[in-house]
Length: 499
Image (tube, rainbow, N blue to C red):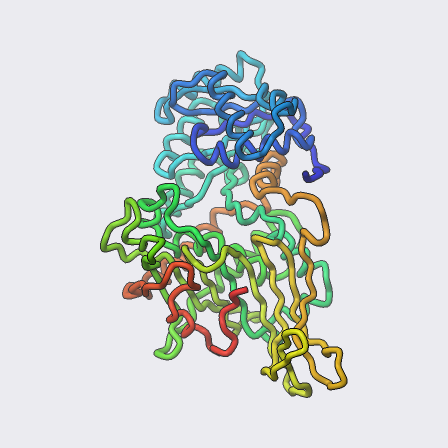
Protein backbone atom coordinates (compact mmCIF):
# COMPACT_ATOMS: atom_id res chain seq x y z
CA UNK A 1 0.00 0.00 0.00
CA UNK A 2 1.04 3.63 -0.44
CA UNK A 3 2.28 5.73 2.44
CA UNK A 4 0.67 9.14 2.58
CA UNK A 5 2.48 11.98 4.32
CA UNK A 6 -0.44 14.42 4.09
CA UNK A 7 -3.24 14.55 6.62
CA UNK A 8 -6.52 16.41 6.32
CA UNK A 9 -6.58 18.03 9.73
CA UNK A 10 -9.78 20.00 9.19
CA UNK A 11 -13.00 18.10 9.87
CA UNK A 12 -15.05 17.72 6.70
CA UNK A 13 -18.35 16.29 5.51
CA UNK A 14 -18.17 14.62 2.10
CA UNK A 15 -21.59 14.61 0.35
CA UNK A 16 -21.91 12.39 -2.75
CA UNK A 17 -24.79 13.17 -5.10
CA UNK A 18 -25.66 10.06 -7.10
CA UNK A 19 -24.35 7.93 -4.26
CA UNK A 20 -25.93 4.68 -5.45
CA UNK A 21 -24.28 4.88 -8.87
CA UNK A 22 -21.44 2.85 -10.33
CA UNK A 23 -18.78 5.55 -9.91
CA UNK A 24 -19.40 5.77 -6.17
CA UNK A 25 -19.09 2.01 -5.68
CA UNK A 26 -16.08 1.47 -7.97
CA UNK A 27 -14.01 4.61 -7.41
CA UNK A 28 -15.15 7.16 -4.84
CA UNK A 29 -15.79 5.01 -1.77
CA UNK A 30 -12.71 2.80 -2.40
CA UNK A 31 -10.57 5.94 -2.76
CA UNK A 32 -11.92 7.46 0.45
CA UNK A 33 -11.43 4.15 2.25
CA UNK A 34 -7.78 4.00 1.17
CA UNK A 35 -7.22 7.59 2.32
CA UNK A 36 -8.79 6.67 5.66
CA UNK A 37 -6.75 3.49 6.08
CA UNK A 38 -3.50 5.27 5.25
CA UNK A 39 -4.15 8.01 7.78
CA UNK A 40 -4.91 10.91 5.45
CA UNK A 41 -8.39 11.37 6.91
CA UNK A 42 -8.59 12.16 10.61
CA UNK A 43 -11.44 10.98 12.78
CA UNK A 44 -13.36 14.20 12.16
CA UNK A 45 -14.98 13.35 8.85
CA UNK A 46 -18.36 12.18 7.65
CA UNK A 47 -19.56 10.76 4.31
CA UNK A 48 -23.19 11.23 3.30
CA UNK A 49 -24.68 9.47 0.30
CA UNK A 50 -27.40 11.58 -1.37
CA UNK A 51 -29.77 9.68 -3.68
CA UNK A 52 -33.46 9.05 -4.19
CA UNK A 53 -33.54 5.29 -3.60
CA UNK A 54 -35.35 4.06 -0.53
CA UNK A 55 -32.30 3.15 1.55
CA UNK A 56 -31.59 3.52 5.24
CA UNK A 57 -28.21 4.26 6.80
CA UNK A 58 -27.82 0.54 7.42
CA UNK A 59 -28.67 -0.63 3.89
CA UNK A 60 -26.49 2.07 2.30
CA UNK A 61 -23.55 1.18 4.53
CA UNK A 62 -23.96 -2.48 3.65
CA UNK A 63 -23.98 -1.60 -0.05
CA UNK A 64 -20.74 0.33 0.33
CA UNK A 65 -19.17 -2.39 2.46
CA UNK A 66 -19.93 -4.93 -0.26
CA UNK A 67 -18.40 -2.59 -2.85
CA UNK A 68 -15.23 -2.22 -0.79
CA UNK A 69 -14.86 -5.98 -0.39
CA UNK A 70 -15.27 -6.36 -4.15
CA UNK A 71 -12.91 -3.63 -5.31
CA UNK A 72 -10.31 -3.41 -2.52
CA UNK A 73 -9.73 -7.09 -1.69
CA UNK A 74 -10.20 -6.48 2.05
CA UNK A 75 -9.62 -9.42 4.43
CA UNK A 76 -12.76 -10.61 6.17
CA UNK A 77 -11.47 -9.73 9.63
CA UNK A 78 -9.95 -6.32 8.76
CA UNK A 79 -11.17 -3.92 11.50
CA UNK A 80 -10.54 -0.84 9.32
CA UNK A 81 -13.59 -1.64 7.20
CA UNK A 82 -16.07 -1.38 10.07
CA UNK A 83 -14.25 1.68 11.39
CA UNK A 84 -14.56 3.40 8.02
CA UNK A 85 -18.21 2.44 7.50
CA UNK A 86 -19.03 4.02 10.87
CA UNK A 87 -18.49 7.38 9.12
CA UNK A 88 -21.10 6.63 6.42
CA UNK A 89 -24.73 7.69 6.40
CA UNK A 90 -27.50 8.11 3.86
CA UNK A 91 -29.73 11.05 2.89
CA UNK A 92 -32.72 10.17 0.78
CA UNK A 93 -33.87 12.90 -1.55
CA UNK A 94 -34.56 13.87 -5.14
CA UNK A 95 -32.08 16.30 -6.68
CA UNK A 96 -34.99 18.42 -7.99
CA UNK A 97 -36.67 18.65 -4.58
CA UNK A 98 -35.61 21.78 -2.62
CA UNK A 99 -36.82 20.29 0.66
CA UNK A 100 -34.20 17.54 0.39
CA UNK A 101 -31.51 20.22 0.63
CA UNK A 102 -33.30 21.98 3.47
CA UNK A 103 -33.35 18.69 5.40
CA UNK A 104 -29.65 18.19 4.63
CA UNK A 105 -28.86 21.66 5.96
CA UNK A 106 -30.86 20.84 9.06
CA UNK A 107 -28.67 17.80 9.61
CA UNK A 108 -25.62 20.04 9.71
CA UNK A 109 -27.32 22.10 12.39
CA UNK A 110 -28.73 19.22 14.45
CA UNK A 111 -26.21 16.40 14.17
CA UNK A 112 -23.01 18.36 14.71
CA UNK A 113 -21.65 17.23 11.34
CA UNK A 114 -18.20 18.55 10.42
CA UNK A 115 -19.01 22.04 9.06
CA UNK A 116 -16.61 22.06 6.08
CA UNK A 117 -18.37 20.59 3.03
CA UNK A 118 -17.19 18.87 -0.12
CA UNK A 119 -20.02 18.17 -2.56
CA UNK A 120 -19.32 15.58 -5.26
CA UNK A 121 -21.76 15.87 -8.19
CA UNK A 122 -21.69 12.37 -9.67
CA UNK A 123 -24.76 13.25 -11.73
CA UNK A 124 -25.65 13.89 -15.38
CA UNK A 125 -24.95 17.40 -16.72
CA UNK A 126 -28.64 18.21 -17.11
CA UNK A 127 -29.05 18.00 -13.32
CA UNK A 128 -26.16 20.30 -12.41
CA UNK A 129 -28.16 23.53 -12.67
CA UNK A 130 -30.86 22.17 -10.37
CA UNK A 131 -28.35 20.79 -7.87
CA UNK A 132 -26.18 23.92 -7.66
CA UNK A 133 -29.22 26.20 -7.43
CA UNK A 134 -30.68 24.18 -4.55
CA UNK A 135 -27.33 23.92 -2.79
CA UNK A 136 -27.01 27.68 -2.91
CA UNK A 137 -30.60 28.47 -1.93
CA UNK A 138 -30.48 26.14 1.06
CA UNK A 139 -27.34 27.77 2.43
CA UNK A 140 -25.19 24.68 1.97
CA UNK A 141 -22.77 26.63 -0.25
CA UNK A 142 -20.75 29.03 1.88
CA UNK A 143 -19.05 32.17 0.51
CA UNK A 144 -15.63 31.78 -1.09
CA UNK A 145 -12.77 32.26 1.31
CA UNK A 146 -15.05 31.98 4.32
CA UNK A 147 -15.20 29.53 7.18
CA UNK A 148 -16.51 26.88 7.10
CA UNK A 149 -15.50 26.28 3.50
CA UNK A 150 -17.46 24.53 0.79
CA UNK A 151 -16.17 23.02 -2.47
CA UNK A 152 -17.92 21.31 -5.35
CA UNK A 153 -16.43 18.57 -7.52
CA UNK A 154 -17.95 18.21 -11.00
CA UNK A 155 -17.52 15.07 -13.11
CA UNK A 156 -16.98 15.17 -16.88
CA UNK A 157 -18.35 15.61 -19.48
CA UNK A 158 -17.98 19.37 -19.25
CA UNK A 159 -20.34 19.94 -22.18
CA UNK A 160 -20.35 18.46 -25.68
CA UNK A 161 -19.31 21.58 -27.63
CA UNK A 162 -18.22 25.15 -26.95
CA UNK A 163 -21.75 26.49 -26.53
CA UNK A 164 -22.79 23.82 -24.01
CA UNK A 165 -19.50 24.19 -22.11
CA UNK A 166 -20.03 27.96 -21.84
CA UNK A 167 -23.58 27.36 -20.66
CA UNK A 168 -22.43 24.84 -18.04
CA UNK A 169 -19.78 27.26 -16.78
CA UNK A 170 -22.34 30.05 -16.63
CA UNK A 171 -24.65 27.87 -14.54
CA UNK A 172 -21.89 26.87 -12.13
CA UNK A 173 -20.49 30.38 -11.75
CA UNK A 174 -23.92 31.85 -11.09
CA UNK A 175 -24.01 29.89 -7.84
CA UNK A 176 -20.42 29.00 -6.96
CA UNK A 177 -17.16 30.92 -7.11
CA UNK A 178 -14.52 29.56 -9.54
CA UNK A 179 -12.16 28.94 -6.61
CA UNK A 180 -14.73 26.52 -5.16
CA UNK A 181 -15.25 24.46 -8.36
CA UNK A 182 -13.15 21.35 -9.02
CA UNK A 183 -13.72 19.90 -12.51
CA UNK A 184 -12.25 16.42 -12.26
CA UNK A 185 -10.35 14.62 -15.03
CA UNK A 186 -9.06 11.35 -13.57
CA UNK A 187 -6.20 11.17 -16.09
CA UNK A 188 -4.52 14.09 -14.30
CA UNK A 189 -4.37 12.08 -11.09
CA UNK A 190 -2.19 9.35 -12.57
CA UNK A 191 1.34 9.22 -11.22
CA UNK A 192 3.16 9.39 -14.56
CA UNK A 193 1.10 12.39 -15.68
CA UNK A 194 2.32 14.33 -12.66
CA UNK A 195 5.84 13.09 -13.29
CA UNK A 196 5.86 14.82 -16.69
CA UNK A 197 6.32 18.20 -15.00
CA UNK A 198 8.92 16.81 -12.59
CA UNK A 199 10.87 15.14 -15.37
CA UNK A 200 10.85 18.21 -17.61
CA UNK A 201 11.56 20.94 -15.10
CA UNK A 202 13.70 19.16 -12.49
CA UNK A 203 16.29 17.88 -15.01
CA UNK A 204 18.40 20.39 -16.89
CA UNK A 205 19.51 17.84 -19.50
CA UNK A 206 16.01 17.47 -20.98
CA UNK A 207 14.26 20.83 -20.87
CA UNK A 208 16.73 22.56 -23.28
CA UNK A 209 15.93 20.03 -26.04
CA UNK A 210 12.14 20.20 -25.73
CA UNK A 211 11.69 22.49 -28.72
CA UNK A 212 11.47 22.65 -32.51
CA UNK A 213 15.27 22.54 -32.91
CA UNK A 214 15.61 19.02 -31.52
CA UNK A 215 12.14 17.41 -31.54
CA UNK A 216 10.91 15.86 -34.79
CA UNK A 217 7.36 15.14 -33.62
CA UNK A 218 5.23 14.12 -30.65
CA UNK A 219 2.72 11.26 -30.52
CA UNK A 220 0.05 10.86 -27.84
CA UNK A 221 -1.90 7.60 -27.85
CA UNK A 222 -4.79 6.44 -25.67
CA UNK A 223 -5.76 2.99 -26.88
CA UNK A 224 -8.42 0.76 -25.34
CA UNK A 225 -9.09 -2.91 -25.98
CA UNK A 226 -12.72 -2.72 -24.83
CA UNK A 227 -15.77 -1.84 -26.89
CA UNK A 228 -19.24 -1.00 -25.62
CA UNK A 229 -19.25 -3.14 -22.50
CA UNK A 230 -21.31 -2.06 -19.47
CA UNK A 231 -24.10 -0.70 -21.66
CA UNK A 232 -22.19 2.35 -22.88
CA UNK A 233 -23.49 2.11 -26.45
CA UNK A 234 -26.17 4.80 -26.17
CA UNK A 235 -23.79 7.29 -24.54
CA UNK A 236 -20.93 6.61 -26.92
CA UNK A 237 -23.08 6.75 -30.05
CA UNK A 238 -23.92 10.35 -29.16
CA UNK A 239 -20.38 11.23 -28.13
CA UNK A 240 -17.65 9.53 -30.16
CA UNK A 241 -13.90 9.35 -29.64
CA UNK A 242 -13.21 13.02 -30.34
CA UNK A 243 -15.53 14.32 -27.64
CA UNK A 244 -14.97 11.46 -25.19
CA UNK A 245 -11.17 11.39 -25.11
CA UNK A 246 -9.51 14.15 -27.13
CA UNK A 247 -11.46 17.08 -25.69
CA UNK A 248 -10.15 16.47 -22.19
CA UNK A 249 -7.68 13.63 -21.56
CA UNK A 250 -5.45 13.97 -24.63
CA UNK A 251 -5.47 17.77 -24.69
CA UNK A 252 -4.46 17.83 -21.02
CA UNK A 253 -1.55 15.45 -21.68
CA UNK A 254 -0.53 17.57 -24.65
CA UNK A 255 -0.49 20.71 -22.49
CA UNK A 256 1.71 19.16 -19.81
CA UNK A 257 4.32 17.85 -22.22
CA UNK A 258 4.57 21.08 -24.26
CA UNK A 259 3.86 23.96 -21.83
CA UNK A 260 6.45 26.53 -20.83
CA UNK A 261 8.01 26.37 -17.34
CA UNK A 262 5.53 27.82 -14.85
CA UNK A 263 6.44 30.58 -12.39
CA UNK A 264 5.73 28.16 -9.57
CA UNK A 265 3.87 24.97 -8.73
CA UNK A 266 0.70 26.64 -7.51
CA UNK A 267 -2.47 25.98 -9.48
CA UNK A 268 -2.72 29.40 -11.11
CA UNK A 269 0.77 29.30 -12.64
CA UNK A 270 0.37 25.82 -14.13
CA UNK A 271 -3.13 26.52 -15.43
CA UNK A 272 -1.97 29.76 -17.05
CA UNK A 273 0.75 27.94 -18.98
CA UNK A 274 -1.70 25.25 -20.11
CA UNK A 275 -4.01 27.98 -21.37
CA UNK A 276 -1.22 29.42 -23.54
CA UNK A 277 -0.83 26.04 -25.26
CA UNK A 278 -4.57 25.66 -25.84
CA UNK A 279 -4.73 29.14 -27.37
CA UNK A 280 -1.89 28.25 -29.74
CA UNK A 281 -3.24 24.78 -30.61
CA UNK A 282 -4.79 24.18 -34.03
CA UNK A 283 -5.54 21.42 -36.48
CA UNK A 284 -2.68 21.19 -39.00
CA UNK A 285 -3.37 22.06 -42.60
CA UNK A 286 -4.50 19.14 -44.73
CA UNK A 287 -3.21 18.06 -48.12
CA UNK A 288 -4.23 15.31 -50.50
CA UNK A 289 -1.20 13.22 -49.48
CA UNK A 290 -1.28 14.11 -45.80
CA UNK A 291 -4.74 14.71 -44.31
CA UNK A 292 -4.90 16.01 -40.76
CA UNK A 293 -7.81 13.85 -39.56
CA UNK A 294 -8.71 10.18 -39.83
CA UNK A 295 -11.90 8.74 -38.35
CA UNK A 296 -12.54 5.05 -37.88
CA UNK A 297 -15.20 2.66 -36.61
CA UNK A 298 -14.52 -0.91 -35.52
CA UNK A 299 -15.95 -3.65 -37.68
CA UNK A 300 -17.13 -7.03 -36.52
CA UNK A 301 -15.13 -10.23 -36.31
CA UNK A 302 -16.10 -13.84 -35.69
CA UNK A 303 -15.82 -13.29 -31.94
CA UNK A 304 -16.78 -9.61 -31.53
CA UNK A 305 -19.65 -7.48 -32.86
CA UNK A 306 -19.19 -4.38 -35.00
CA UNK A 307 -19.95 -1.05 -33.36
CA UNK A 308 -23.20 -0.83 -35.34
CA UNK A 309 -24.21 -4.21 -33.91
CA UNK A 310 -23.66 -3.16 -30.30
CA UNK A 311 -26.56 -2.82 -27.91
CA UNK A 312 -28.25 0.63 -28.04
CA UNK A 313 -26.21 1.78 -31.06
CA UNK A 314 -27.97 2.92 -34.23
CA UNK A 315 -27.54 0.33 -37.04
CA UNK A 316 -26.48 3.11 -39.45
CA UNK A 317 -24.30 4.99 -36.95
CA UNK A 318 -21.43 7.09 -38.30
CA UNK A 319 -19.99 7.78 -34.86
CA UNK A 320 -16.21 7.45 -34.78
CA UNK A 321 -14.76 4.90 -32.35
CA UNK A 322 -11.24 5.84 -33.50
CA UNK A 323 -9.75 9.19 -34.37
CA UNK A 324 -6.26 10.31 -35.29
CA UNK A 325 -5.29 13.98 -35.60
CA UNK A 326 -2.28 15.97 -36.72
CA UNK A 327 -2.12 19.13 -34.64
CA UNK A 328 0.27 22.07 -34.49
CA UNK A 329 1.22 24.51 -31.75
CA UNK A 330 1.74 27.96 -33.16
CA UNK A 331 4.27 29.37 -30.73
CA UNK A 332 8.01 29.99 -30.74
CA UNK A 333 8.97 26.72 -29.04
CA UNK A 334 6.93 24.28 -31.14
CA UNK A 335 6.31 25.92 -34.51
CA UNK A 336 6.62 23.31 -37.27
CA UNK A 337 6.60 20.28 -34.93
CA UNK A 338 3.68 17.93 -35.70
CA UNK A 339 1.74 16.65 -32.70
CA UNK A 340 -0.15 13.44 -33.47
CA UNK A 341 -3.08 12.39 -31.30
CA UNK A 342 -4.70 8.97 -31.53
CA UNK A 343 -7.38 7.21 -29.53
CA UNK A 344 -9.84 4.41 -30.12
CA UNK A 345 -11.88 1.47 -28.90
CA UNK A 346 -11.24 -2.23 -29.59
CA UNK A 347 -7.61 -1.64 -30.50
CA UNK A 348 -4.72 -4.09 -30.27
CA UNK A 349 -3.44 -3.09 -26.85
CA UNK A 350 -4.50 -1.09 -23.83
CA UNK A 351 -2.01 1.72 -23.47
CA UNK A 352 -1.77 5.44 -22.86
CA UNK A 353 1.56 7.04 -23.59
CA UNK A 354 3.34 10.12 -24.88
CA UNK A 355 6.20 9.60 -27.31
CA UNK A 356 8.62 12.48 -27.96
CA UNK A 357 10.75 11.59 -30.97
CA UNK A 358 13.92 13.61 -31.49
CA UNK A 359 15.52 14.43 -34.81
CA UNK A 360 18.18 12.13 -36.21
CA UNK A 361 21.83 13.23 -36.15
CA UNK A 362 22.82 15.40 -39.13
CA UNK A 363 25.54 12.94 -40.15
CA UNK A 364 25.26 9.18 -39.86
CA UNK A 365 28.69 7.99 -38.77
CA UNK A 366 27.75 4.49 -37.65
CA UNK A 367 26.07 1.44 -39.01
CA UNK A 368 22.84 0.75 -37.14
CA UNK A 369 21.72 -2.82 -36.56
CA UNK A 370 18.73 -4.60 -35.14
CA UNK A 371 19.69 -7.83 -33.43
CA UNK A 372 18.03 -10.96 -32.13
CA UNK A 373 20.60 -12.87 -30.21
CA UNK A 374 23.74 -12.94 -32.35
CA UNK A 375 21.85 -12.42 -35.61
CA UNK A 376 21.81 -8.79 -36.76
CA UNK A 377 20.44 -6.90 -39.76
CA UNK A 378 21.44 -3.47 -40.93
CA UNK A 379 18.76 -0.85 -40.34
CA UNK A 380 18.34 2.85 -40.78
CA UNK A 381 19.23 5.36 -38.10
CA UNK A 382 16.96 4.96 -35.09
CA UNK A 383 16.07 8.34 -33.56
CA UNK A 384 16.15 8.92 -29.81
CA UNK A 385 12.66 8.62 -28.35
CA UNK A 386 11.44 9.62 -24.91
CA UNK A 387 8.28 7.79 -23.78
CA UNK A 388 6.02 8.68 -20.87
CA UNK A 389 3.87 5.61 -20.29
CA UNK A 390 0.76 6.58 -18.36
CA UNK A 391 -0.85 3.13 -18.22
CA UNK A 392 -0.31 0.26 -17.81
CA UNK A 393 3.28 -0.48 -16.66
CA UNK A 394 3.79 3.15 -15.68
CA UNK A 395 7.21 4.60 -16.31
CA UNK A 396 9.51 6.77 -18.39
CA UNK A 397 11.71 5.24 -21.06
CA UNK A 398 14.48 6.71 -23.21
CA UNK A 399 15.56 4.94 -26.38
CA UNK A 400 19.18 5.70 -27.34
CA UNK A 401 21.84 4.20 -29.61
CA UNK A 402 24.81 2.41 -28.05
CA UNK A 403 27.67 0.33 -29.41
CA UNK A 404 26.90 -3.36 -29.54
CA UNK A 405 29.56 -5.53 -27.84
CA UNK A 406 31.46 -6.98 -30.79
CA UNK A 407 34.61 -6.54 -32.85
CA UNK A 408 32.71 -4.25 -35.22
CA UNK A 409 31.80 -0.62 -34.61
CA UNK A 410 28.03 -0.88 -34.93
CA UNK A 411 25.29 0.57 -32.77
CA UNK A 412 21.83 -0.65 -31.84
CA UNK A 413 18.90 0.83 -29.99
CA UNK A 414 18.79 0.28 -26.25
CA UNK A 415 16.36 1.42 -23.56
CA UNK A 416 17.06 3.42 -20.46
CA UNK A 417 14.19 2.17 -18.37
CA UNK A 418 12.56 3.84 -15.38
CA UNK A 419 9.52 1.79 -14.48
CA UNK A 420 7.68 2.32 -11.22
CA UNK A 421 7.41 -1.41 -10.62
CA UNK A 422 11.15 -1.82 -11.10
CA UNK A 423 12.10 1.04 -8.79
CA UNK A 424 9.57 0.80 -5.97
CA UNK A 425 7.61 -2.07 -4.51
CA UNK A 426 4.91 0.32 -3.32
CA UNK A 427 1.45 0.32 -4.81
CA UNK A 428 0.83 3.48 -6.83
CA UNK A 429 -2.02 5.68 -5.63
CA UNK A 430 -5.18 5.49 -7.68
CA UNK A 431 -6.09 8.64 -9.59
CA UNK A 432 -9.21 9.28 -7.52
CA UNK A 433 -7.25 8.93 -4.28
CA UNK A 434 -4.91 11.69 -5.38
CA UNK A 435 -7.63 13.97 -6.73
CA UNK A 436 -9.99 13.60 -3.79
CA UNK A 437 -7.12 14.28 -1.41
CA UNK A 438 -6.25 17.44 -3.36
CA UNK A 439 -9.88 18.60 -3.35
CA UNK A 440 -10.03 18.08 0.42
CA UNK A 441 -6.81 20.07 0.77
CA UNK A 442 -8.08 22.86 -1.50
CA UNK A 443 -5.36 22.26 -4.11
CA UNK A 444 -6.89 22.80 -7.58
CA UNK A 445 -3.69 22.24 -9.61
CA UNK A 446 -4.87 18.95 -11.13
CA UNK A 447 -8.39 20.18 -11.85
CA UNK A 448 -9.58 22.02 -14.95
CA UNK A 449 -10.40 25.73 -14.91
CA UNK A 450 -13.41 27.13 -16.75
CA UNK A 451 -11.36 28.92 -19.41
CA UNK A 452 -9.40 25.71 -20.06
CA UNK A 453 -12.62 23.82 -20.69
CA UNK A 454 -13.86 26.45 -23.12
CA UNK A 455 -10.51 26.66 -24.91
CA UNK A 456 -10.48 22.88 -25.40
CA UNK A 457 -13.98 22.91 -26.87
CA UNK A 458 -13.11 25.83 -29.11
CA UNK A 459 -10.42 23.69 -30.73
CA UNK A 460 -12.76 20.68 -30.92
CA UNK A 461 -15.48 22.78 -32.59
CA UNK A 462 -12.93 23.91 -35.17
CA UNK A 463 -12.02 20.28 -35.85
CA UNK A 464 -15.68 19.33 -36.24
CA UNK A 465 -16.38 22.23 -38.59
CA UNK A 466 -13.48 21.22 -40.80
CA UNK A 467 -14.25 17.50 -40.80
CA UNK A 468 -17.97 17.28 -41.52
CA UNK A 469 -17.22 14.76 -44.23
CA UNK A 470 -14.94 12.64 -42.05
CA UNK A 471 -16.65 9.35 -42.80
CA UNK A 472 -15.37 6.66 -40.40
CA UNK A 473 -13.17 4.05 -42.05
CA UNK A 474 -13.78 0.47 -40.90
CA UNK A 475 -11.03 -1.30 -38.98
CA UNK A 476 -10.87 -4.82 -37.52
CA UNK A 477 -11.27 -5.19 -33.78
CA UNK A 478 -7.88 -5.95 -32.29
CA UNK A 479 -5.97 -3.86 -34.84
CA UNK A 480 -4.38 -0.41 -34.45
CA UNK A 481 -7.18 1.32 -36.32
CA UNK A 482 -7.74 2.06 -40.01
CA UNK A 483 -4.72 1.95 -42.32
CA UNK A 484 -5.68 5.42 -43.58
CA UNK A 485 -4.34 6.85 -40.31
CA UNK A 486 -0.79 6.27 -41.60
CA UNK A 487 -1.34 9.03 -44.18
CA UNK A 488 -1.40 11.63 -41.40
CA UNK A 489 2.31 11.13 -40.73
CA UNK A 490 4.50 13.68 -42.48
CA UNK A 491 7.31 11.13 -42.53
CA UNK A 492 5.66 7.70 -42.84
CA UNK A 493 8.97 5.94 -42.12
CA UNK A 494 8.65 7.08 -38.51
CA UNK A 495 5.44 5.10 -38.10
CA UNK A 496 2.99 5.15 -35.21
CA UNK A 497 4.44 3.98 -31.90
CA UNK A 498 2.60 0.74 -31.22
CA UNK A 499 4.69 -0.69 -28.42
